[in-house]
Image (cartoon, rainbow, N blue to C red; front, side, top):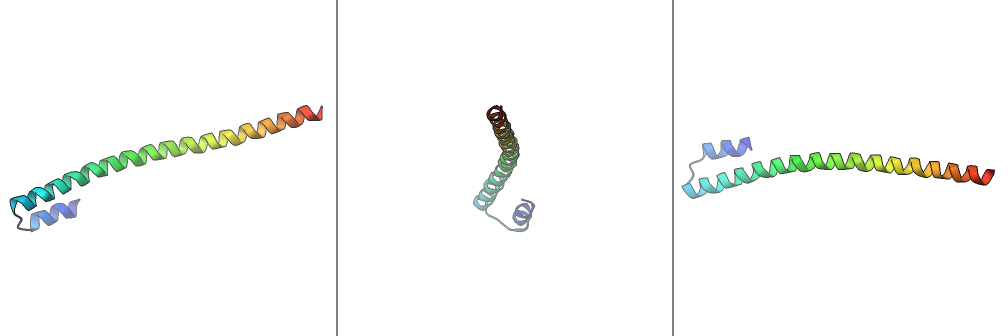
Length: 73
């Protein structure tokens, strides 16, 4: 982002070119913020998935233990 701003400051641009660069800069800023939000959401959901997978394994092991206990009696 900073290099884009530096580039626009160093160049002699027409008003149309400046407008296009400004639109590009604004779009990249918005996309960057959205990407950060999505990464945060992904990390939260991935952590939940890992916890649910572990819970599933724990429940499966407990179920197996209970079935073996019932069959052993």
